[in-house]
Image 1 (spheres, rainbow over the protein chains, first blue to last red):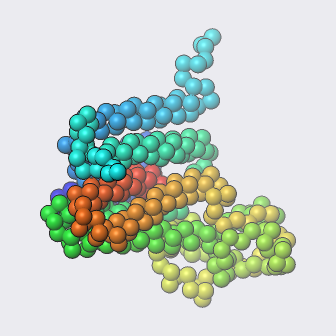
Image 2: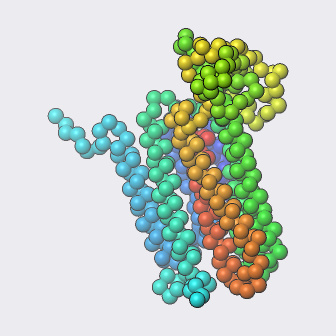
Image 3: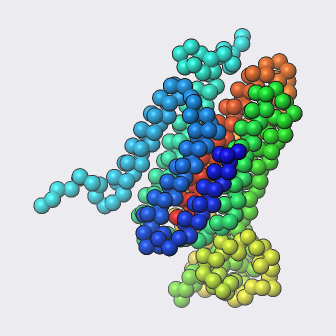
Length: 92
Length: 273
């Protein structure tokens, strides 16, 4: 029930943080704050509701592989976001 | 032949097979939703303008609370089976399924609000967003011409006294949409160069919004169907193989928590940022 309460508080916190002024002047900071709160909530759901905090090595290994490929997916996305991907143009 | 390792853990993994299976499946689902999230990032960063304030935040927050509650009740359902309390399991599982139905119901209301909200462009270059009298669904210029409709009565959002950002809040007050409170202007269909409801084909924002939330809602419905099956037909297995039923509930719960996790990321990304 403590986790439930924490998740509800986290939800309210996310909504409140999105209404603050710094979101307009520093949208990147706003996104970072929202994703950090979402990550904390995910950790609580995954760790306690899904019992990941006391799981076997086989599951940790599966999830570590998933995390690696997910990071690669997002990394490739960020790398290709601009007109020229990083490190692919020559400086004259 | 008995399916092996439905209850007894395997020596190599230390787990019963269904648990390994569901985690592998969830790993694939992470890649599926991850691909869509990365598409969202690319689309949003590459766009000149990105709409904001079109989604109702209180409704989204309430839906988040509904899903979090359903995650708690599904854990309680599994715990009840572990404690051999079958009646309590039925209560908690029913509560979980009701939460799922509530989530989908609220999502349907949100979708309907979008499908009855129109964007029009006139021959003189003006663009307006608002409602058509009678709140029709999925009208298009072609449909209007096929039906030989000459004029439409259009209530622009600006007539509500606020920009489109306020529309998100208006959706929570259906009473405010009583016809008498709207300022309709008559627009000739011949003056229209574009008419579309807020549907996936209208713009990139709605394309990715409906894709992400539609796929998530499909997962909610699928999970609810599985849990309903376990609730309705679990009695027999409870009498013959109670540990196997408990494991089924645990595995269904893992899938359900994943669905909740995806929404925990979807809500701030779509509604707040």
